[in-house]
Image (tube, rainbow, N blue to C red; front, side, top):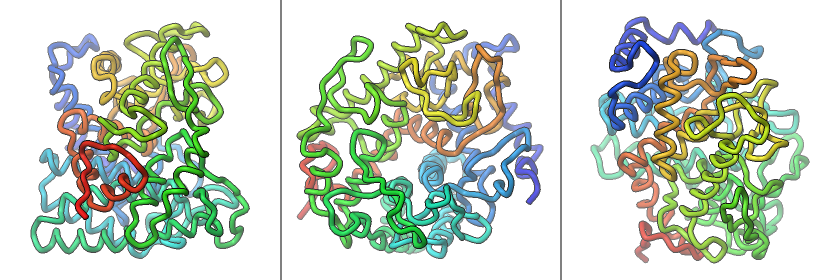
Length: 451
């Protein structure tokens, strides 16, 4: 396959350049209003999943490198989790009129057609596929089968799409019915590995359960447990959540980081990377959400974000550029490969990942907008045709013009949730989601199930 750059038409580039016409030549955001800035960033990021999509599947390429340098046999690789985020970003773009409703429906039909025929493993999707064939591309030697966490990210998106189209035209209702079938075919119970009260991340048709990764909280995987409980066909008992995810209450661990209170135990660290505050909450609305382990998920995730910001402002390793207008540590590209940057000296490599602060806009709008304006003012060094590049380091003078789907998606989705709450409203309105939350003992003002 030729370089992905051929899928960026010249006219599109000229249009995108014009979309930033209010930006002053000195690199500042000038008089651009908050809403105009948000729309500019959301539109550009949407284009990663629209113009930059793999053409056969309509799904998100794992990565797009504007320098044209890729790992071998990588340009047609699509990502399931990143595509889930991208589906939600596209849905928001349809609703905003970035593309017509007809164009959007055609893209969603292409995506669902691919998902119906691509490799699945007891209903669960792999981490990667080859987009031109639908066959699995191993994420690792033994990771060549079902990935239940990435599957949950896809299903979170599809349930939102289902709600968007369920009351629409006959063609839209038909697509919603096809989505419902995919949702019902995921065998969440199989991933308990013999009816244990915990969910396992991976299963391989060749290696079975050898990866041996039972998932406990807290991390990005909350949505997996909620959807597993919500399934109308293969729903897991509530005990799987309480004993597996919450480990009979061991998930509760009140502590302070950077002087800010956190209530939950974060796996392997006092405060995790910011994608832990984002991936599960692209559809799951944290506002008013609580259960017996967390008195308020919005407050907890806001505090996790504030810890990240406070650490970067304190900047104990004295990196260049860190401060109130430039913070955000999460998993992304790094100066030496890929790393889960976190607010501690071990995992802080001096790399700012724009997705960290920007996808936290629902929790810290004033602070996230401050970062957005600063980064936008940095110009083409960090801002390209598909939005902000994945990561940079001022200390190392490192500014790769590269994107990752799993980081771009949350930016567009959370900007939309901040602006309208669209994805939250859609996902939380699904009757199965409502029943799943009730089953696990959640309080959620947005979810009142009808028996």
